[in-house]
Length: 208
Image (cartoon, helix red, strand yellow):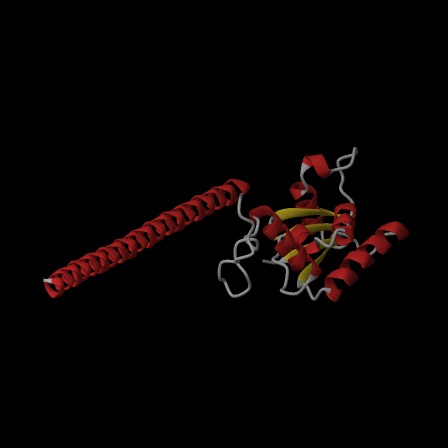
């Protein structure tokens, strides 16, 4: 792509000369390749420029004044639109050229692309892993809390059931001990009664 700048080398207008110098100096500062085309000494260049400037960009008299800027056959603009693009850091876009990496215009384009497409930084961290700090919706939190509460209640119920079973076992053991003690007491009582009967019989025999 060739940038064409139509100039008037022998213009008597100081304002036109200054505008032409501003455009050329800025393009050279950006190291943009361009071709200067003189309309003062070349009738063909003047006619081509007048023909290819869009009607809506021509002044009231229909004769566009230099400088006029083109990218190949495509019209870019005049000095005023070039100046506005320079102020907005969008000269490359104005010229129809891709901005070089690292330029202000390239950085602005990157920011605009990010804003347009959005980001997912809240979902992943720098390593690409899911960020555990991602905020959990309140409904999910409540659901988890409810489930934990039910689990805790179930665990308490199991402990209570276990406690009741232990109490029942203790009561059974106590009953068994009491039954053994009663059996021992009955056995001792029976032995004592038998001993007394034997003693009585012995006394009766002695008296006879």
